[in-house]
Image (cartoon, rainbow, N blue to C red):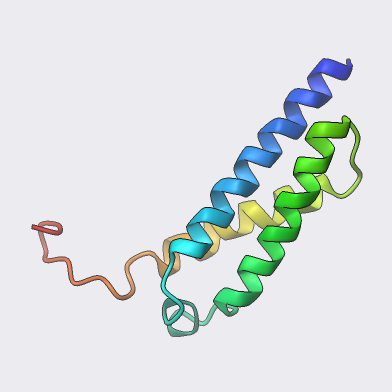
Amino acid sequence: MGLIWQAIYIAIFVTSLFALVEAVRTPSQAFPAMDKQTKGMWVAILGVGTGLSLLAALSGSGIFTFLALVAALIFILDVRPAVRGVGRSDGPYGPW
């Protein structure tokens, strides 16, 4: 049973790390343009969540890791699609 929880904690860490990297890569002006929280707030929330999930993956136990997963999923499923296209100068057929 412990190995299953370890795999879950590692999956949560990977998900929150992906969300953190995407938040850092997104331009700052995209967040207020789409009525989302600021970039700094999302980077802070996802950074804390990534740190907590890393501690859980290393130690094998963590209560707040599921909160980190919720924050990461909110960013990935709601915020990222909304702010993804802001600031791009792609044409109708892509970036070429």
